[in-house]
Image (cartoon, rainbow, N blue to C red; front, side):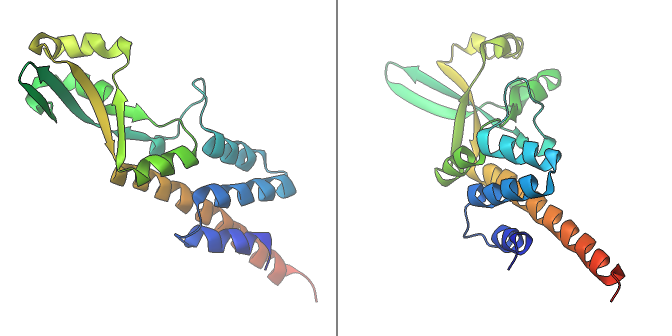
Amino acid sequence: MGLIDEIRDRAVSGKVPLEDVLRHCMVLAARLKHDPLKTWTHQELSGYQSSADVPDYRVVQATLRYRDVGPFHLRSDLVPSSRVPPESDGILRRIPLRPGVAELEAWQGGGGIKVAMPENLHDYLDAAGLESWGLTDVYREVSGSTLKGVLSTIRNRVLEFVLSLEDQSTEIDSAAPG
């Protein structure tokens, strides 16, 4: 079994960690001298730097939640959609997932992540009237199922790539003399 077959079989199997599949892709990228694959697998394994563009499949919609702590209560709930102006909704809820796949897999296994609001988004919270509620904490939550979808997309991209290589090698083999 060749490297392409091995990557294909590992990508199809849900039992092989995606991190291992991508490491095999790095070997393939080196053998093929395929810089786009090398760059992509490196970013998926090590994470996307803050200066790098994050692929669309890694930009997810989060749930906007708040935590309210009072002298006799602790409450956590969804921020009502009616409290978030439409022009702020996308900015507040969209999260680019920059970490490598190992961290995404760990988050997915833990049921998801809670992401603090960056300081530069507090103006949007104020415009939405959320700061005036006197809430202790407003945060964004990304579910485990959303993370699973991102990881599945990465696995599918690997599979699509190696299948396209198989198609090309079949065409080359059938065109070869002899």
